[in-house]
Length: 224
Image: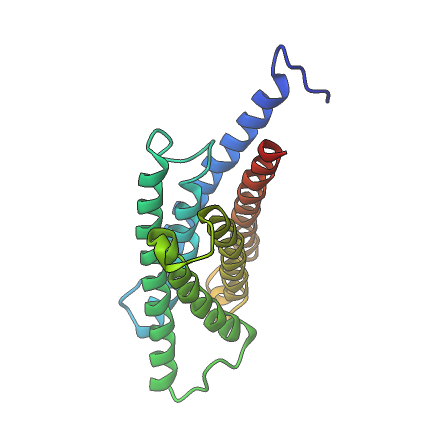
């Protein structure tokens, strides 16, 4: 399809597609989190807090934190970039807190049952992801207090933060997908529900990847 400067047909279609994708991602992260909450019934056991907190962290808080900067589907679209940044920081803080609580819950549950820790790919990747989330949160401090990063421009810090943030999100998505293959989840849902859950996680990851890559492609075009 050739871009028409007079009608702007391609940008309009492009914008509608992006808006639909962002809205779908909002619905997925809310719906999937509620579904896991109902399935795990947090509070019924120590283990029940693990899938609840981890899904809340990576499927809801982190997804919404990144979607705040979406030009097509941000719930704070009319607010300033500074305000979005503050809300982003709050959501990321909640994400990190929930991730630590989820890790603590599964660690204590295994301790009570005398089971070995971090023996599966899901456990190892989950631990790695929580550590990376903590490092990503600490690395974001110079974005707020720029004087801490002498010799680094704010634009460069933002680029690195966005790139590492996308990697962190993909780690979280991969950890969630491995969690869907656990004995608990596969034993709690049917085959079609499993595939639908996996599709939800994959779609969210694709939307976030597309948003971040498109943002920096647009910036390169403006600079060229």
